Length: 304
Image (cartoon, rainbow, N blue to C red; front, side, top):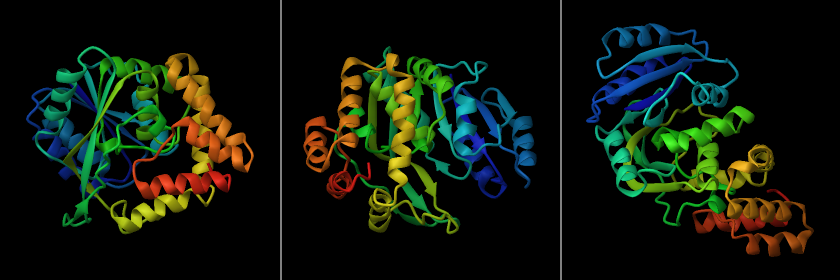
């Protein structure tokens, strides 16, 4: 059994296509848990229609907290009514490959059947009209907590994790809010000793919107923009919130993850030369050479 955690807000235009792709999954048993954050378009009508015809399991529609997308997903993570073998996040406007869930669960069952495990993957970006833009970057460095301290690896729309991971994630998420659910999941599961796999397969068609204030999330310019966030203070704010959350849940982390947190905290508090030295010693890294260079430059200017 897999429970799909879907957060919606004014997504009626693309929601049908997303739900069709979930209904067409080769995996047979899927419970849908949808938290709507106060939509004023036809989202609820679309959801009610799917509630009536869903045949793969339960289809439950909940009222969200109306505090933004991160809190909407957090409300689903901490919901004690949602009990499953596996959990997957869903956005409201993407398209899943038919074997997305089956491949995700297959990797976990083969590689980490009992310990906490998270599967995520690359995506194929598409326009609002569904035309192909291109693939997301192929990250090749090993996923780890030291990478999670510096960046979010896989999109939440690609993530699926098992019950063992969920128990720790839900416990941590009841103690604190977070910047984004995908980054928080990567931090908590890797930091608590779970297995994390980043697949090179593009299992999600990730819809890009022209009115997105950050522009497309795919391509060289997108990578440059993400590095640029390091220098505009946004990364500092996000890292502050992540570190606060990790401190609150320090007892859930492994000894090695606690050491990594302490080392990264030392980087952030040191003088100029100390920041570079301690960053090197900490082992904290980003996935790409450009990202890694940006991390060191940001450290020099106290922007991490």
